[in-house]
Length: 153
Image (cartoon, rainbow, N blue to C red; front, side):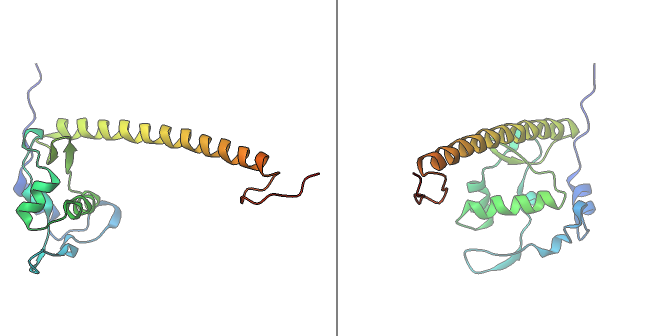
């Protein structure tokens, strides 16, 4: 029987990330300047508010309330920045969380890859629909695609 992997240490993650340049050359984490609704300026690291494991997931709305912002989209944008800086923030239908172990992060990555593949298939189908619509418009407009009629006799 396989033994459960040891949870990642928050302190180790913080030490590894503090002030360092992360994969992709995005830059130091100290560029997360943020202004709360109260006007107070602070450095924002959403990942510091997250628990380990999917069972600790916290919604963007709840995170916004904890941090002091009214718009949860601020949290969503910040999480994307933090992911690009190397923080392994996962998401579920229940909210955001840090992976408890490598297995949980791997599971999230596989789900992420499936969504990316589904999005690519949807894009391909929509592009085909656009091509069909454009071709139909050309036929209806006598060859023009800008909506103007061409003089066909």
